[in-house]
Length: 442
Image (cartoon, rainbow, N blue to C red):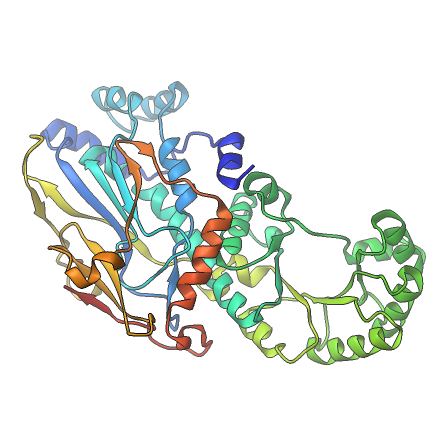
């Protein structure tokens, strides 16, 4: 069973109240004014990347599709809105029959993005599109932030295994979304069973310090774990004395011991000592897993250490210092009337400072050099230049309200690997810098 099918099987409850009140009051006012049915184009984008980041990662698209598909108001929700006096009766009647019937295009999940990239384009009537603003931004801002952090950590890990283990450091529902986004960004497994169940992400986990402390001795704890989980298990060796623990672990499990985990101390120094000790004891195949508040910088600092896998929690599920991508959802074009053939008029916010935006329905393409390496993100509203026709980035996701682009999560993960590989090499540098390629407007 692929992950897309699994997501549908588990099901998603109605997402209609994952929104802000002003979305509904705008609909009420637009219905009364006769403008609610004007064909409109909204785009989700960010004006800038988080400070120092060189690229962004599109993540959460699959969850957005679920959210749009499940955005409907049931009787209980309508009753709540009526009781609270949020909107009037004509609007409640309209909401009761709401189903998104428009079109959505966007960057495919796992792709990279830059300032101004039209990551998602939503088209339909004003009323049906504006209702989706909050839930779309909530998903994209969170998941893309986690995926970007995961991507940086994946690059720093240099092919070593990465385990997401941040469930206890965030909200229980965001933990599931974080595990999914981390998998998109390059992590290999999660400790969170809900994420494994919902998204078919590989899950891992053995024991914590509490298990060792439960027993009368560390040896008793190791023996109990090996007897239950087998010699291929991972033993946590830093509860007391690491050297003694490693010796006991190999004596009890034998050279077939799967791995040892180190969760404290000078990880670089301790990893070297443990590797030497394991080899001297004949456990040359036993792997070393390190945890303890790692981020991409700590992972990079361990590049020379004999480490086989990293477990990352807090820094990953908080976006490694950037928990949001600051994406916005703006109306960029609308018809002058509700007539089906009314032409679209570009519109844009013209604020002072950095909050202005560019009007018009946009296309996006990535220009590459003679070696196939990206050199610019090109965005336009007119005809697509012939030389960029086969480099366009937006794909169709929803047509006439029906999702047309579900895909397995592994395909998304592979796409990100390819997208990151197509950027200049400086993209994976951890030093602060500007976006690795410029955004140009055609």
